Length: 199
Image 1 (cartoon, rainbow, N blue to C red):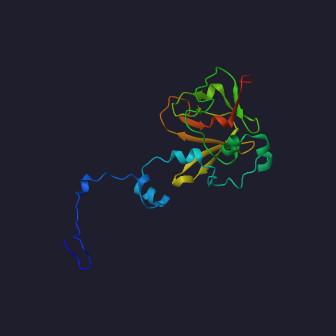
Image 2: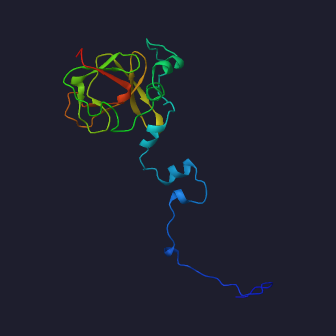
Image 3: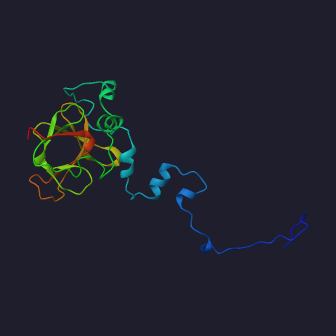
């Protein structure tokens, strides 16, 4: 084919579309916003955002709660490791199957809050759930406070230490585990400190 002003013929090649390799999102030539990705794949699990995010959850009534241990963020940073602070004070989550107490099943003892040392769970409350985090079917009476967690577009029940408000994890009900309460307190290992005595 010749065009005016061109000294040599222009050759046009056509390639069938199916012979071109498909491009994945990470090789996409344009920047993709987070909203675009979420619209394109709304059913992709978003658990990864739990493990790396230090953003605070929006919990109902959390701001109105008053806990006996009222240390400031600076005071907590002085006594907690960076990862403990991220989980306990900023409501983060550790990665599944990585916590110290996930496969820990002592016959007696108490799991205390890693922040303020308040007793939370007895060893006899712990059970094997296979979920990747320590699981308990009950807590020591009055030790754990529940809040509605509306983060990430869903409604869950967050559990915190009743003494200091430290984030422990979430509680789930009706999953069918053969436990007395049919509840699973899904707790971050890093939020806990185990003591053998005092069961």
